[in-house]
Length: 427
Length: 107
Image 1 (cartoon, rainbow over the protein chains, first blue to last red):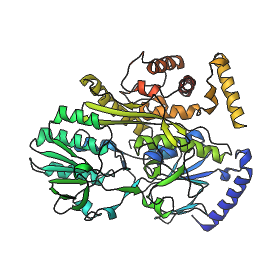
Image 2 (spheres, each protein chain N blue to C red):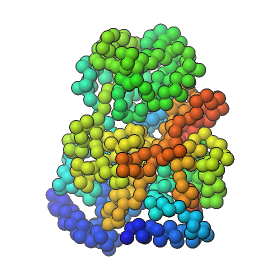
Image 3 (cartoon, rainbow over the protein chains, first blue to last red):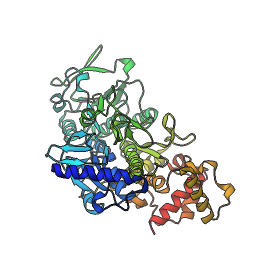
Image 4 (cartoon, chains in turn blue, brown):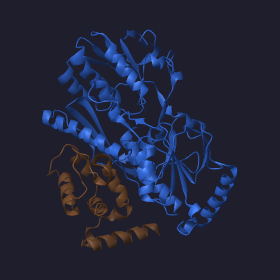
């Protein structure tokens, strides 16, 4: 955008600020408040859509480099052979054509919080009154000797949707019967806490019918994991002793990787795999780091009611990159956070005090194609952050029969269809 | 100011649905807006409660029936896989607000 546009914008922004106590309804059309959203995943695309829903008068620009978004949720079903990659890939036509969002397929490379502009790798400059950043995660490659971007082509993390997921899928298809698949989850916090264990389940489903002499070894940097008892109950039922879990206290933590040798190295042992799925430690994505939105641990602290950064005014952060105690880093959590953030941003731009926030999380995992389990929570904001409301939420019961598990497996698919339809288009 | 306005809105709302004022929970003024409460249903039930299948559709269901179902899930007199756990997270006033919003937005 030209510099004159930027100056004009700043004048308009000043004018808008001056009248904000009375709302913006009386402003000239070009005075419409502008929100830029960085990231077209579960958080960002939801925020863009619900901003227009809550206040159609806001000009919303979504900046997302990918034209097609492949989700991490349900990527494990692709690994298990019960879902195509195409069926978990979506577009942005609905946002552009139905919701009147300006969709820009470029990468955001800079945020100027003083001038209130975002710059992109395409050379664009996008002014904003408020910015929403939902950039997802990046990997702390520096934490693991032997593991970097090149090593990930040999030992895929497959923890971002798309090419990495396809690589892991193809390696599992190519391996010989009798091989070992290592899944190595990171320590908390990380994206999708039950994800590695659903992944082990879905790979086991594929191996059970195609390469039944094979094994799955989970080398864990933790001593417990999400939905653990439910997963272990289901593994015993469906896969016998095919899946072995080694906790951190049992020398499970991978401290180095020999990617070419497909070998995971723990403190006291070397584990050779046919397929090595190493999932590294994580932090907020690069744009959050370069914009000064992260704390010393690499995540973004926020004001809970509005998701506005506590470090950079005018910038809101949500989804996996943000610290939203006690919500997990999940697509569903990002979707509900985005709705709260969109409502708060609409309120702030109209000069209203933001309303009371409310968020939820519903997370299904498949242990087998017709064996679903879930955890859910309804969150209230307390002075310590978002907390599950007492007496509500929680896990699927242990010891339920096949009818209950099959119902949750069907609901998992129903949830996926509906949440993706709440966000993206099929085209 | 804001709190007072919210309380007034809640009062008007209660009057409109014919509830005795005493039935309003004390915390009603701290309730999230109906469109935000209901938006948290749409991640499973689809935008505006229009479901593509499997998960029950909310669009087109009268508020009175949604309220009854949610109260029955909350009290475990109606059993589902996950809705009993979720309904317990909402006050009666929130259930009313959600049901009326979903009815209204689909009319």
